[in-house]
Length: 131
Image 1 (cartoon, rainbow, N blue to C red):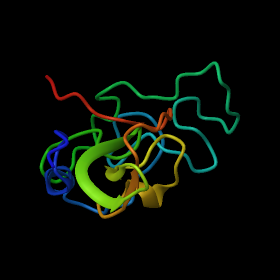
Image 2 (cartoon, rainbow, N blue to C red):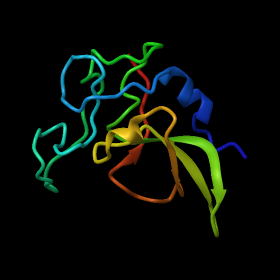
Image 3 (cartoon, one colour):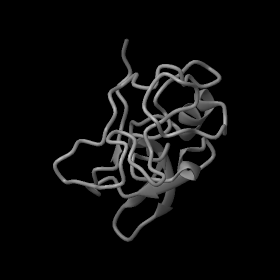
């Protein structure tokens, strides 16, 4: 049953590190778009439905993984094709990377969760590869 997304290992391998991230936007090392007591994009703790909390691709240019990939931790949970469990009428698919509203621990390359693909949320998506 091929869902068409990247495999769990394909996502996990290039992240190559469980280094602690930092949530400030910019070019310093080990930064990502996630939440501690402040939201990265706005640098305050006030949530607003009128704000786009997603960071632009490459916003953390100093934060390449061990293998040179970017933006795999934070911003949005990223789908992969692994089946975590069988739900009542669907399969729970793997998610990795944490999102802009999660704490640091969810950004670690070894952290995984799951959701049914039909779920709609502003915290889940996929990354389009490109230059």
